[in-house]
Image (cartoon, rainbow, N blue to C red):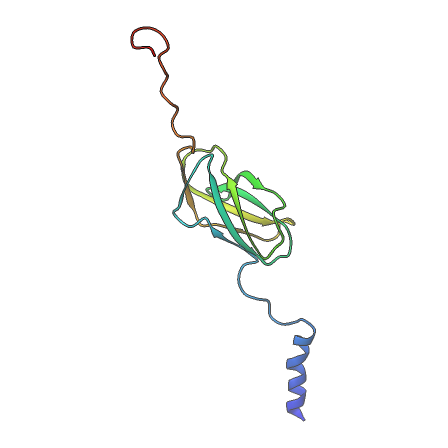
Length: 136
């Protein structure tokens, strides 16, 4: 009889949803990867897992989680997502990351740090001589 009583206490929480919560973060950013380099003004592929069931916003952050620019709003509530985001024209350097935030602001995750390199447009073209010797 005592075993039956124990079994009831072991099974009841499972029936009513009192089971331990799944481990792992509710929002996990899986790309871009650590140490990758992405051009200012260029695109970066962002992938994530979202177990919140809520739409997410995407931010570019720098340093100690300082939000530099919102890259996308109300992206998706799907369990997994991917989006090619355009990086704004920001200063070159390391310690940038992508932060994915659930719309209620409670759950969020960040990518590993990456570097923003030179502009995707490259350096300006040299001026073309239009008059004088050697003009074309």
